[in-house]
Length: 265
Image (cartoon, rainbow, N blue to C red):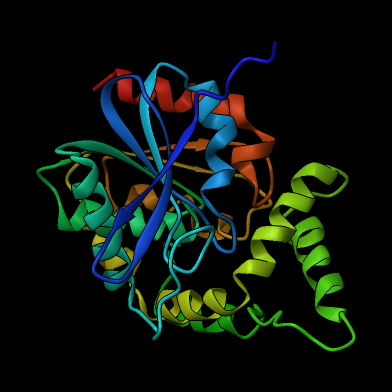
């Protein structure tokens, strides 16, 4: 008989609509995960299994996975208000925050907004770019894979997940990320507009909790990786593998670095 998946799923009511999340019951201070764009909380299942025994929650950002779709273009602050409402609904009083790419920006904003509750901050692929650097990146990053009559958007997303994100020949991973991206074709544009206007550097300068920053050398965010320790001297930096899908492609290394980080607190 197959063993039941210890990861369960629920919804929380927020002021914007219902948010979906995954969770695994365990011990200790809860860990809250925030996913990258255009993924969903599903990307955290591998590391949740690797960290089995901890108390963990992975939330679908509004517009992604099975959470509600915003009816306007929210700011990062608005997204984080909804995510914080989920955490409050669950009853979390203190937590370790963990985010990847866009999710790293969410985790950083919440750490800034909720310093008394935030025990640590972990970011994989933190977007510690200047406004000028963001505007330059914006010229080369497309968030438009909306449905086309000829189905060309399907090939576009398949290329995105395989070649740009880095799934390559891992067909299960590539298929999973493709499904998530197709669902989020409108939301990805919304959240990227918010990210271009957001200043992670200004927030990170003011963070007082210990921070773990991880990134792969071929991650799109790697050019900003080493400046983390200059911006905030409490930063611990670790290089991992996996292009833009580190959580799937270097799960054990990330889990080990994370466990060592929070256990020294």
